[in-house]
Length: 173
Image (cartoon, rainbow, N blue to C red; front, top):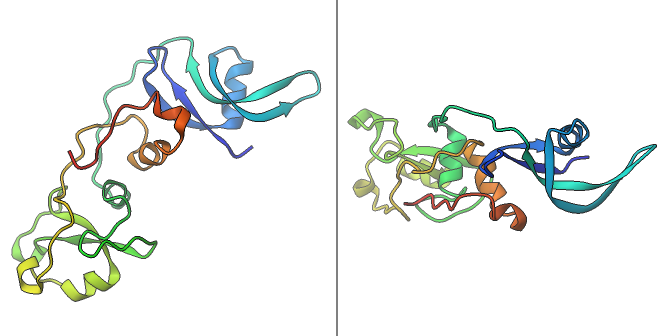
């Protein structure tokens, strides 16, 4: 039971991504309606059930608007796990200050980018002009603040069924 399930509020706004086990418990307790099912069939002693992919809460949950925090994972997700200097995609990425901290560069959405270790070593604590680097795209704070974490939100966009319920998100706008 390792499949994830998208949980929607009663107004179809995405709230969370939960485990299949949690989703089945919510269905059994009558707290959610199944909107989409997976191909997987779950058997118990008395019933058999199609595995849910998207569920909607029957009662509305009021939540405060979350704050999008500046974290390493958020920067990686915003930059799509791609070095913003050379375009390398991989697991051994770091975070780089475009304007180095020693030159007064802030730790902000507009000054941090995803960077591979090779480019980070070459750039060191120099400016872009000093090492003749250019950015693939200008870093910006994402405009959309999802209820689910940014990394889960971006990876959820890969699921075709879920795309209908997730708002359009362009990390570069």
